[in-house]
Image 1 (cartoon, one colour):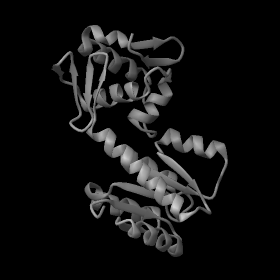
Image 2 (cartoon, helix red, strand yellow):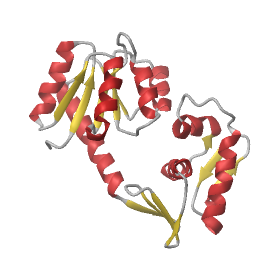
Image 3 (cartoon, helix red, strand yellow):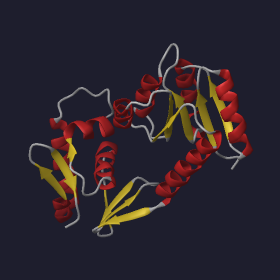
Image 4 (tube, helix red, strand yellow):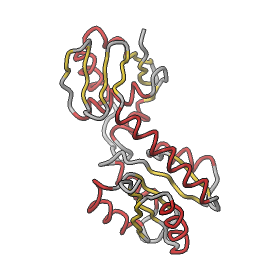
Length: 225
């Protein structure tokens, strides 16, 4: 497991050491950051080697939410938030921003390690799988799309939008939720940009474009019929 690197971001040195010691026992490499500003600096310099981030919410200089927003603009790296807060609204807010998991303080280090292992296993599996959705084949690792075996060229944004829809197959997604998850939280443009992208994607999918259903007054839903 020595090829797995975890970025631990927490302003408490004792907490970072505790987490580092337990992760090291499992063979993980650990990079530390004492605040949000340092976390962003480290991530920018070493993004390609970081496999997961453990991110505290309440920190000086730059809080966890701000760090999360900026990282999600450029990366889908798994992020587990460490928070002393237990309010449902905070957790919902975090999931909207792209949090993969929550762990409330105080926590069992063994449980934390188990959560880390579970998320890494899941993301590793997802990145290697080629999934078929009624003739639409998506290779997550290669970021490619095929329709009935024929390659379909898509822009990065079109690919990410389609991937988000299929990952939530059967779920009606509002335009705001799509914007927050595909265009990221800091996008303040007109939500009609989604309609434009959906139109292009449907055209490229041909007959399979019917799988993307318009939910009047809500947004869109992907469902193989």
